[in-house]
Length: 340
Image 1 (tube, rainbow, N blue to C red):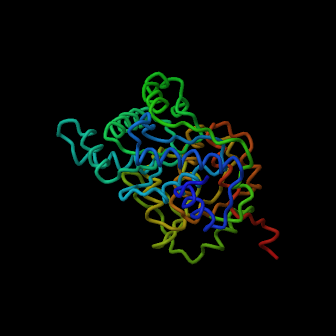
Image 2: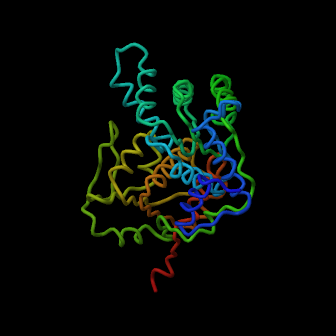
Image 3: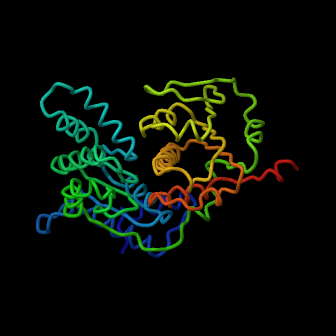
């Protein structure tokens, strides 16, 4: 029998014109049963897990299921954040508590007061400083009895994949494994690859194609983002236009990309190169940018000389499968069709 909480989550999904496959329905039922017990624990049952951690392949609907669970949850104070946004928010709060005793505990107290339910979408970390900060924060939030939701492409043990840092993050990974209901999303199709939702555009052809589309923009040579200067091609209040080199070939951080995506609803990137020939740092920056732009629902235009799938060949970065899946939701136009 389907619980009322599960029914509400299903209605949220169906209202978007979507339907779950059998594996997704089974996972949603387990999640709603857990959340129901977590919100109203029975005195004679074993205490339910503090959080739920859903991981698996790209495009399988992890974020969709957890978003439905989040919306249906009968909790007054709740908050959904992408991992990059959470880390930026924590850093900002830490600065506000500089000089005080145990500032991270104070930040955790603030977050716990603001949201009993915290949904952390697309959990992954590559910087050891971020990994340790996130681990300590989550440990404190669990102690504060926060209800935690996580979606990820990785198991808890793989969250910080760099072997140099694995041992330092291991205690926090074990905490998640021990205190959370860890579910693997069953294998199946990548629904993004078959989605009719287009969040942007890829123009295949010479740079003049993008120039023609953006000729109305006031010429702007640069923009200061935090403490770095970006070389621009053009900008107005809504749109920013820059080349791949300016976006990914200097040491920009996720907080820089967050600032761009918060300020501009439309971002255009020209001269996309063969990504397999880029350095791992450049690939990581592009992955971070795409994660943030997708989460913020920015409209993305990209331009490159060759087909997008060709430009993606040979990329060795482990996170790129998520980016490739999101690229599949870009509408693609070629120079020949544009010239007609």
